Length: 139
Image (cartoon, rainbow, N blue to C red; front, side, top):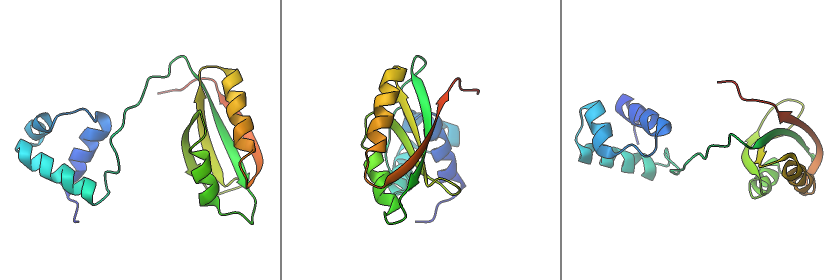
């Protein structure tokens, strides 16, 4: 599939608000609802759009970043896949540098953060962790 600037603009609109209707997107881009629908279907079929989701406000939650070293004998992608299934894990990044994986954890309180970190450390292949608690998000 060849993606063009209109597709990029549709992606930007949906990234800002995935509930935006095809009719409203069409009005913004001077396209028909059916043209927007067809483009979104093509983007989905080509797996440029993998899923539609929501982001829940977490103003009263505690967040942490956990940097993880993976044993050299383990496949980092397999460890990452296991981490995504743990309670409290919001995002998993495979990274370069001193650590192999960065994980964002979010839970209602520090006790649950600790439980999530304990579970994370028990995942086969995790050899070392370094955790930082996020004090506040600056936007």
